[in-house]
Length: 117
Image (cartoon, rainbow, N blue to C red; front, side, top):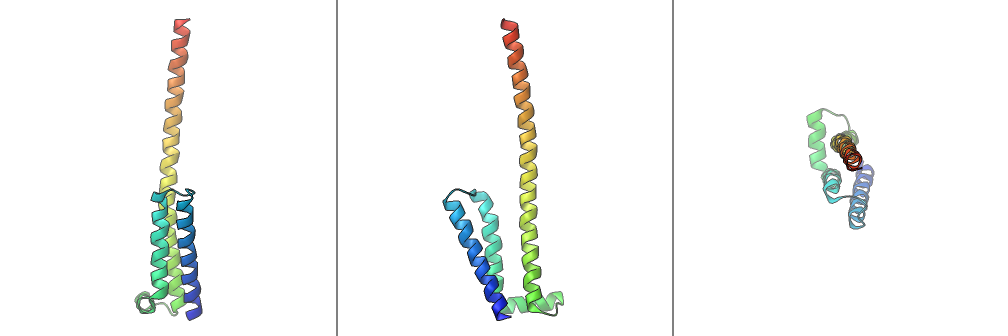
């Protein structure tokens, strides 16, 4: 089990490093990187804090600690994915509204140019 926790901690450190490099190179916006940084830090903390994992495992009634790690990792990343789904949905709605405003402006511009001719 220690090997699994070490692998989990390594993956979390790798994720933290990738997010920080992506922010530095402007591949990801800072406001979106915060969610990934919090999720990776939470999973890293859980991977390194075995007594906390044992408590959570006992609290949830799980038979094995690695199962608790994967259950918590899945829950954390489901929350992250849900947050990004909300952001994508809002951006799509904003794009539709902007396209409609541009179409209205084009209509008025054409009407003005026809009226002046």
